[in-house]
Image (cartoon, rainbow, N blue to C red; front, side, top):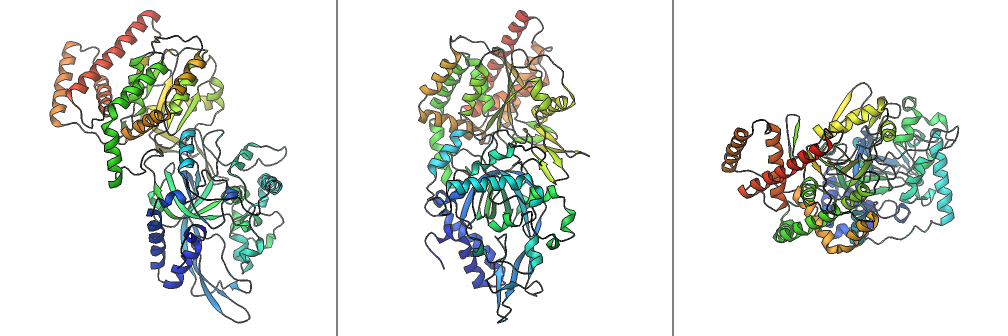
Length: 639
């Protein structure tokens, strides 16, 4: 059996070893999975596996073992492949069995051809996910993953700057002509034989930044291949992730970490060539539109393939925490951090108070908002959501932009949406199904769970919303109220539940719904907002900033409960409050109080509600409401 780094550099050799030992017995597949699972447990081995997130594609060896942290953007139809097939030498009649798992192209020697009529041939099924880097992933998350990696990679020997430039243009050219693209299996299946991989030399691979080419346009040409990133300006590779087992466990918008075999075979691009012999095409395959072929079989240099050996859903993407908090080895980390929680909370409160111009009440609510999460759904109602409308933000100021920059430094994934008439009318917020290309076209609201979405209403001017604008505003309202986005499938809408933290910054009360409005009362008016906000971040030690990041992620993942005794006390207290002020205390107030009390308890590291936290929640709500009433008296009916 191969040893050393062979499992990283030549994983197919490992697979071949198990296949050769076990033949047609399907146990070889389980043994392959177990082998790599055990390897990844040894001596932080996961850090030795190169990641497509931070290593340019041309640094990665074809057919090597890689990993990828990604979001499932779309799920293609299942595809059939030859799980086991037989090759025959026409001269000697010698026959050899091969496995087709973890490969795009059938392998056979120079004097061999695939026997399509062999009784040994087994046809199996695999699922293809179209995966993109996590939308809105913060720069500090990327940097931390890069610094933790111990993978040893170097540029391909076939790589030169000029060649890279040429291949980049070649791929752009292919992107502009959809007729150049075709399903990678078509040519192979109908030639009756499969060429030797080595005959094509090493593939020319592109850097992950090739995605920048997606926005280029050329007159009188089909637009270039859109890599379908949900957010504008995103970089990194999109990948076709091929899953062989348990694909029903994964769904669109899940965050995955996949480990598998990288496939960037040049044959995949050669088969897209415009000059291919049309007689090779299957009439059934031709029923697919050119656009569908183009989207489902893009050049491998632009959209590599990963054949998954191991895949797992991620609880979170914060690199400062253990990946799975339920595991035994994570418990000591959690207990150690919880023991110093109180000073971390105090420092974070002070930091956010300065960021919010001296307003400690707004800072309290911002902490509660940042650790809020949908913990369950009762019928259609998502429980635990806590959308905050921070009103009173100065207009024509960089204040809201800087608040977002601070949030970016604290949470693993975020996006700022400027709510202008133009943006609402022009932006594509809602994903929709393109039946011509048979794919889900992404929109800005196709975000992973636990993303912080900051909607900035301060630049909103008077104007007319057109029909798409009305749909966009409605979609934002549904996201906030029901924590769902209705994707547009033309003939119907499909509901996708989500768990996205929404913070709305506005001058007056927001046009959008919210769970809680906090009116900002600045205690400090800095002469230079830019300098003031920049100095805040530079004044915080990196180690302290990391504690803030751990604090906000960890507390969202803790369990919480209320004892029967406290539940009874809360109910009695609410009845008393109704007696004293029946007009202003409603069921919505009780619900908000319980949510505030929940996250107030968790913010102090308490996983159950105490009377002290209940009273503190009532105090915060009273202060918040009093402030709103005062503002209403000052500004009439504005709030």
